[in-house]
Image (cartoon, rainbow, N blue to C red; front, side, top):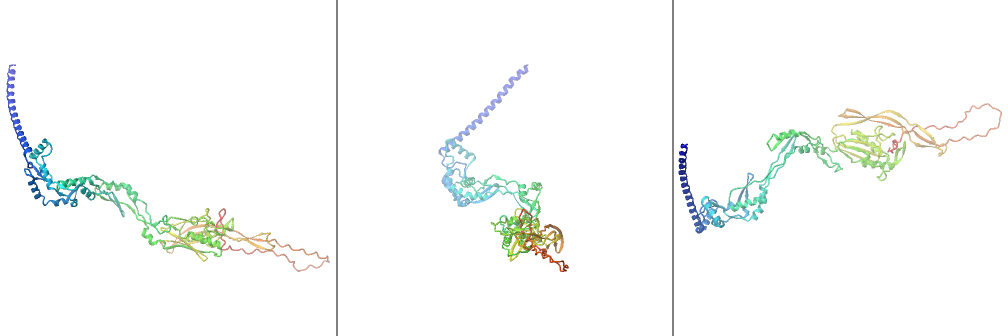
Length: 585
């Protein structure tokens, strides 16, 4: 216990000595600092109160001007900036890392050395006492740099910046593509940025007024291009291939060609993988490419150059009504153009057969015979067209033969029509447009199909008569006629059953023989009207005489009429279709 007590006073004594030493050192340091502050304050006080030159430590764009008066500074500046005025004609701006040299000589910028000397002299002499003291101390210990003043009109600068901003901006380039053969070339595009005119004007003004030749740093917000939209590209180019054709919707005359289009397709996922695996701006990808068979140039050079099929039939030009109808129907179909695949409808093209549309009365087939009706004769036009289409090897969509035999075309090669009931239709099954050309000359009707022949082809229609049924002559009593008088009521039409084949020859060799049609024509007997027979007068009874030997002379008997020979139908009296529709022979 005594050792502990003895130790305690010793420690306290030692600690007190060290504290005394530290206290003496702190007092000395504080005295030094206080002395320095007194010196500084004395200096600052003297400087603020009586110092007339530029404060020590002040520079102008790095040029030492401290302790100089205004005249000395101005002389120095005039010497230093004598060759620097031209530097104000150029300003460099670095936009997003790319440097652009701008010609600003027309902005009227000029160094203001007088103002610069005044600015250096004014340093540390504005504001309250504390602010001034702080500036003087900052210059003395760390230096203070004054920028060379420049005279420039801000409005002139801003007016020049619109063109400058456009010059240094970079437009965004959106993705694009091109199709070259079986290769799809994709350009990802390029990012862009737009420089703000007012921000740029402010930067240029600051740099001019500072008189610095350092480039202006400007960071513009970057706008990235849109992502490559492969689905949109696919939708645009992956359409079906189509050949050049005539744009009949906008130009029915056939003088406008719709250009050909290639067909193309590609796998979207495959192309996306190619894009993802490349860091190049432009990449290439495979495309399944299908070239059109008929290009625009090909169609232009071959349009309507060949006569595919033609037929000429004759009519009685003396039958005015029928001739009018034939000519009118021919004019309606003349010039009709069909693109590949188009279907021609005779009823649609010719339209209703009415008096209002110019058609006349002529012989038609109705009610099992021939009678007058509006539009008679137009079936000769449809039949002539039918033969022309057969020779042109067209696809027949709809055709019906007359119910009775007609003579202006061979058996099995006629086509009857009745508006609203029976039509004649065919399809252009070639690769090129075709044109119907129809017209009359004298008593002849000619219909031709113009198109493009791609091979040496000829078509022959072979018809076989399966059966024939000659008409008979039938007599009907007509009390209105005089006894023994006769009158033809209707001509006779023989009946037939036929089968027709389309035989196609290419380069003179038969390549196909197909069934074209089966046709049945009904028999119609010839009807002759006759008056009542004459009644023979009774002779008076002879007187009774004794019997005599019988005479060997024959007794005269009354004559009996003999049937005339059957007549062939008139070439201008074609057959009739079944009711209810009235049909033109």
